[in-house]
View 1 (cartoon, rainbow, N blue to C red):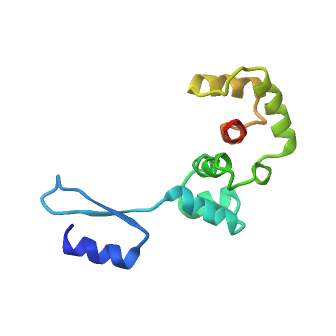
View 2 (cartoon, rainbow, N blue to C red; view 1 turned 90 degrees about the vertical axis):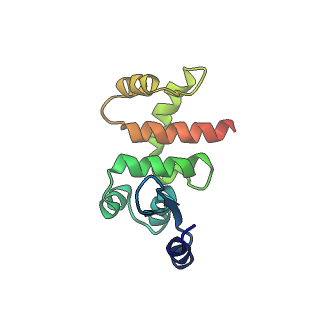
View 3 (spheres, rainbow, N blue to C red; view 1 turned 45 degrees about the horizontal axis):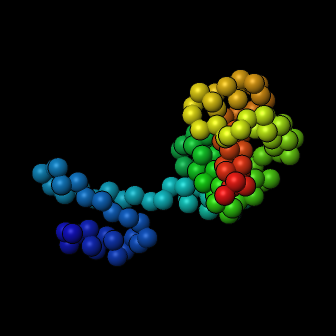
Length: 134
């Protein structure tokens, strides 16, 4: 690893560094765990919309980040999804022998649930149900 990268790595830990040897000079790119950043902001009390605005991302991206923490049990789904939505989706999930894994299956579920449910809602519920199965 070039000296500059080692110095940056020491200063900015736990940021990860990658180099791009395909260039005539070594480029150093800081790569952070973006999902953890979103989760940390959520734990500080920011809404998904606020996190999205602060991070210059769309809200569904933030919800996708938080799905990881719902699935691993670090985040209670009740902090993101109302019990009414959970119940409605739970009934739909109960009609299927397995969780939706493909885009077309999620899209079909979205159509059946209607406009009051977002893809983010569905993905949160999939994360929650996956957690229950593990």
